[in-house]
Length: 356
Length: 273
Image (cartoon, rainbow over all chains, first blue to last red; front, side, top):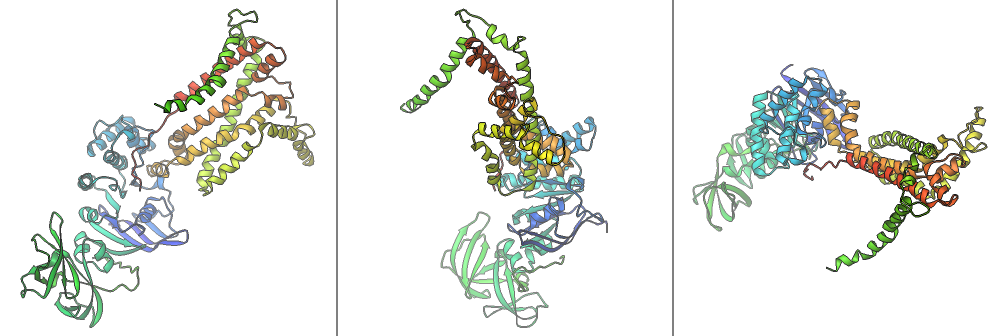
């Protein structure tokens, strides 16, 4: 039981008559870096706010280390939050901001001084004690916000899209910083973002959400390589998302072309969704692949070229480091292992709730 | 080049109606009837004849300001809590009395507070002793609060409503209960509104003479009344101007005090979502 530091049981929440979360259940283990990932409005921030105590669920329970904290006010939870807009107190110095939580706990001044110094060192902003928040850049303010939260040694750190306002380079640096922090502090991180790259980079476990439901829970590799439904496949990474028919185990038909694959248990002659990642579509000489295609466009993306080729009535997105002229006649080949079969969703907001 | 001249009418207006009058007041304040230079008119505000009015004015203005604060601040907190989506409606309700002539409002208050007024009729109906509020300093304070309360509520309400909910959430997140949040987050961030409110109430209170006239029955003399008398009854313009000048000094001291405490919390550069 103690392995789960946090459990959400059947959390439901609605705003103005609209259901934002419906019977959401989630277990979070100690020291995990869990990311709630999804598009705007999927309920991830609401979930975070319920964990932090800023919102109360209409029904359901929030259990932390075995204790029901659903109705416990925010100030009494062993949880700290890093806000999206930093929320640094503008009328206080950096030192006063960071020490805020410690002063409430009535720690003595020597302890506070040392903790503030340690926190600033941790986020690489030594010497900033007397500065005021408005004199800091966005990235610096974000690091102070993180320092202010972690200095209280919470059991769980909640982060609400903290890197959204930063430019790409800074964001990438901060992502590495957060991972380093987590290792050094040994705190459970619950992170909310709509940026799937961010989620893939930092998380131990990703919870993909859409319209108030959990779509899939798994490690970054599992989510990426084996998405369980069309939404997850489409949301994470680029994808060739296709409607197909499962003829029998390990054989699927896409637009009347047969492909060998490795998935079983999807039935006979049943309609399914198929996802194939662009980097898994291999370009070959005519005659050497599964079906012919013609290159219709090519974009240089730095890391690779993004090629669109038309074959068997489908526009295939292909990632390759080789240049092909528009109009080139090619064959396409896909390894059986790289064809991911998924159940068709029963409803638009199909919930898929099992761990990988 | 031409843009400078657009300011000309305003410059003329300012000179004619603000600068010149002040110059005249200063002239009369520092001269005797005979024309010689003197400081006695200005310092008269402290002499035995006038000190009572001075102290009373300061005392009543302070009381009025404090009472307005005690009403306005909790009201603003409650309004914020209720999340009323009718911010405009609230403001209209508060401003509405201000649209009415203030003298009429004070006269109405006089009728309510007078011996046979509405207040005593209600008290009699409830079998309670009649209240003797009219023509006492209490009536004047009541009148001032009634008149100037909107000027305290509006800036404080604006300041309080402007506080980012994230900051309050952050303070809770860090362990602060309501009292701590109030003292360390809400109050400091409401300071601009509070300072503004104090300025807009204390100074008019100090210089008022209509309210003490009507609600004090002409028997209670505040500085405003004394100055009025000197100009109109005693025809002692020099003394009147001197006292006015001294009052102006008080007002300026008050403004300096509030300016010192006025802080502009520069918004941290926040990303607009």
